[in-house]
Length: 201
Ligand code: ZN
Image (tube, rainbow, N blue to C red; front, side, top):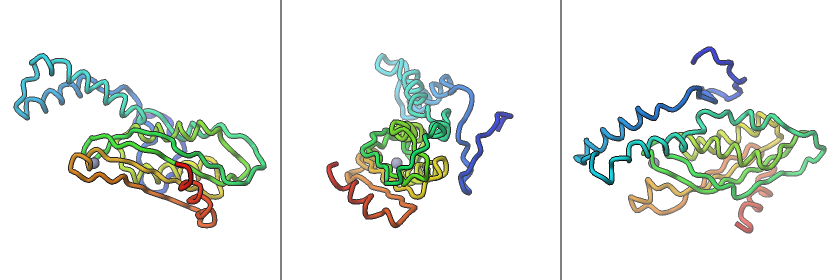
């Protein structure tokens, strides 16, 4: 990486940079999409496809905009609060891109944590879901990254994250079931968390 100051990375092991710098190379994406069209035997100059490379480039820039944002920063503004019950935000919608097929997957995230003297605005949890989903992703890692972030940045006493998603890469092959991935760091809050998630979806 360049000489950019790195945010203190607390992530254990897997070293993915929290945030990239510099713009997305739209021209390069456009050229690559044109190549794909040629490779499948299409004519990139025909009317319907003429603007496709540029359009795909702009769409990818948006779908991957989370690579250039640091989710940890979002959680830095916390409030001192004596409240020590579980805080739960349900049904945070997201759209992400499966890194194995570059096809969308989308669904809902539910995040719960047990504070340790500090809480964060509820909208901030939705914001970190957005940042982490707008990257090449897999559902399992996204779930884990959400849990790690909340645990580390809020110094929470426990965290629970459930991410439910439908994968278009599976749907187009006839596998239609929505997947659910769950991570809980604190077993004592498990039943309470799951009870809340399962009621009133
Ligand atoms: Zn996939």
